Structures are given as C-alpha cells and as structure tokens.
Image (cartoon, rainbow, N blue to C red; front, side, top):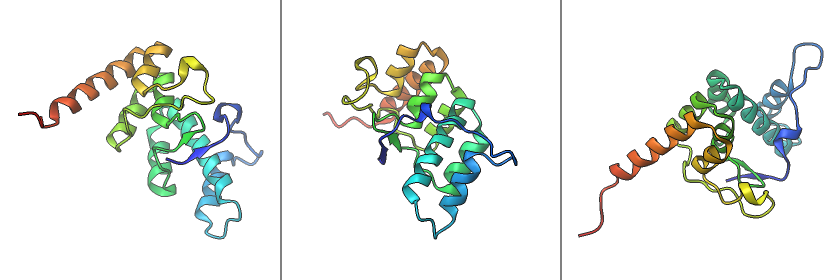
Length: 155
C-alpha cells in the first residue's frame, strides 16, 4: 500500500476559472509520462478519488481506477484507504464498487499518528464509530459471506 503524509481532507478541489479542477490537473500529470512530479500527481489523484468516494460518484471512481490506474489500497499516513472513507461517509455505492474491485475489507488503519479513537480500525469498525449504518450493514454481510465461502482447514 502506498502511503502519503498528508491529510486529504485539508485539500479541496477548486477550479482554475476555466472549468479545470484538481482532478483534471492530477489526471493530466499522471497521463503525461514526462511528469516531473509523479508523487504529487498520485497524491492529487488520491485526493480526487477520496472526493469521488464521498460523493458516491461511481463513474469517476471507475475512471480513476481504470484510466489513471489508482490503487484502491492506497492510503493516508494513518492507513485510511478509500474504503475507510466510504465507511466514514456512508457512501454505500462507492463502498460496493470498491469491494467489487477487491478492496480489502479487513485493512486496519495505522495505530501511529491517528487519533486513538480511529486507530487500528477496519472499515466496518469505522462505520460503527461514524454511525453509518448502511455501509456498516453491507460490510458486515460481506465479511460474513467471505468467511462462509472459505473452506475449512480443520479436520
């Protein structure tokens, strides 16, 4: 998992006055193979992905993953993946899309740096803390179905 040392919620998507926003800028840098600042472009794309998750914009989430090549397991320095964000904002459609694409439902946030309440939490635990019932029910059902589908190794 790639980690970035910033808080994505402190950055906003603004416009340059001509209709281009941070997402256009980030995608342009990522698609330009001559980019001099690939790390910056990945950070900007991660911020854009987080914003689209919060907005439940599946079309843009698909574009960022398919066209730009964003890794859905990319996280902040606190280990929050896009699925953690979906869980905290009750973005059910985004959570479903991320899980369908293989997002780790058991990924834990980092213990260091995050406020104690949010550290070492899975997306399901984040949904419980945030009071986001829809995503919480989905993740709980998904996790149970995954456990039931695994063959038992015990004899």
